[in-house]
Length: 125
Image (cartoon, rainbow, N blue to C red):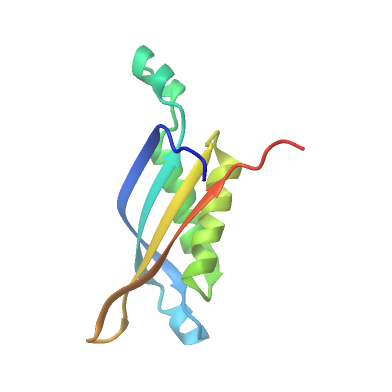
C-alpha cells in the first residue's frame, strides 16, 4: 500500500447516470452519489495561492459528470473504474479514490449500494 499524501476532495457529487443491469434501468438515468479523493501534491498551490498550481475541481467534476452521464454502465464497479481511469488520464493525479453509491437499489429496504476503489497512476514504462 502506498502512502496517500495530499489530496483534493470532491464529496457528495450527484449526477444522473445510465446505470443498471437492465436496459430499462439504464434508460431511467437515475442520480448516483459520488465521492472522489484525488492524490496531488498541494504544496505549490498552497504556497503560491494560484489555481494553475493545483487541480481545478470544476474540471474534475466535469470529467466525472461526462463519464457518468454520457456512457451506459451495467455495474457500479464499471462506473467507478471508468471514472478513475478518466481522472488519471486527464489530470496530473498520483492516485484517485472513487466511491459510487446507487440510491435505493432495492426499494424500501436498502438506502445505498456501492463501491469504493483506489487506483494509482501506472509508472511510465
